[in-house]
Length: 160
Ligand code: THU
Image (cartoon, rainbow, N blue to C red; front, side, top):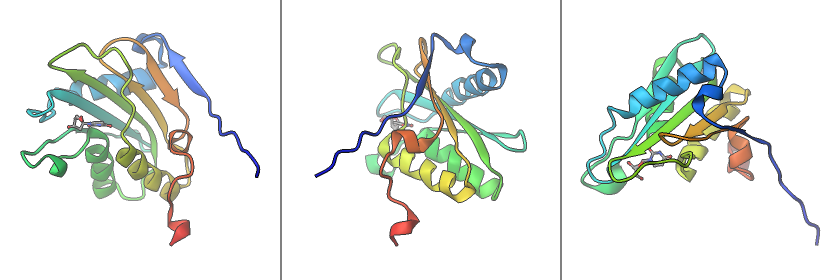
């Protein structure tokens, strides 16, 4: 038996104001995007904004459904929209922001497992890492340099 440690570097910013201009702007787009979330069941609104290599940004927000599993997270709404509208254009970074009608979200919202898997597909497809900036509505912003960092041992097309 052998053991392997998997570690990654997480950058922690005190607030979004500490981010560099490009990331700060992208985070503001995620904040704006979450205002149009359709989340009548969870009351938890998430916004995601992607920055593409050509400078264009693409946004998404969570879209819920009375049949709960049919709803889709903000990150996948955004990344599928980017894939549909700008195929072949690399995604540089993703900013995520979440808020709730029930409480203040002060903890950075990390993408769910399904969204990590979806982002991983795009990262592998473009052969370029996607930076992920995560925040709640106030407080710290976390940044990781690749979705691979938060989805180690990912399932990929190499298994097929
Ligand atoms: N949600 C997202 O949009 N992104 C995530 O990464 C986690 C969860 C949404 C799904 C659902 O509409 C609500 O948040 C509560 O789970």
